Image (cartoon, rainbow, N blue to C red; front, side, top):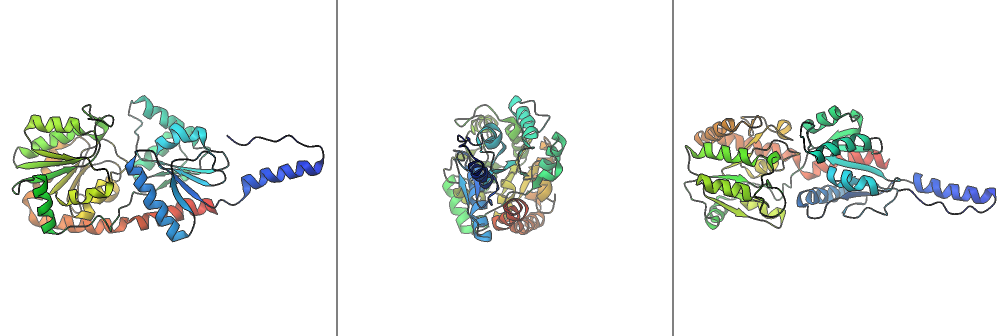
Length: 370
């Protein structure tokens, strides 16, 4: 990192000239924001595009996503995930830049060696970064517990594209459900996240995402209701195999474009998040914006957004009895269901990407540019 010093010619004027070059390089005004995304990581890539586009429009500063950051100097470089910075960026980014990175999730009790290493690296690298962004109050509390200075941490939630995610027409819902083979008399439960290890079939469960808990909750709900499960996302083999063993019908579609997911949300009667840890998940806001009741474990942004029984339901991690009870309440009480849907739509309206990007400029990029 840094720069190579040229050979010094003889004389004080030459020394002053080289000193000015160094000073100009490290002290000229920062003017541009680069948001570093990862290849193939569609979620973080979309976050970056929404944030940079809105910040550019609102603040009239150059702000863009990028896969390449080597060679960039004297700018703000925001790594969109802890993986992008701690595994690659911290060793390769030029020291003249102001560095920001986002920490979505990671629990100190997780014995995974890679997670433990990144926690250690995050603390050590915090002396060299300008800001660490986390999407939830849970994440903020964890970072402080790890030993990161509180003033370095900024809590900014994920946002939602309200132009795309909105309640659909009943006629469109019926057409889509028929296309996917969802019976009219079945409760359609959604799960649209990657919860298997790797990017292929995903027969090995990624337990942090709670696919085992999802299957347990589905089994409990299916004991008293006729249900159909709708899946999207890669590596869903473990869940599909489990549903087949339970005799629960399902459909699975892998979507190449994130925005193609909206009609799938509109097909649902209910969405379940049974994760053990999360940075978001985005599904909380996506469900609320499209008018779908959500039941989530107490992870990620859920405690910051969900008022249980009002705009959704929240249960403790692993409480599949609680998931089944909340599902029954929503299915058996039309007034409760209608109120939860209406409150969810109202809640989501506060999380537009435009509003979230405004916070990024005011709380992160603006002060660093100044």
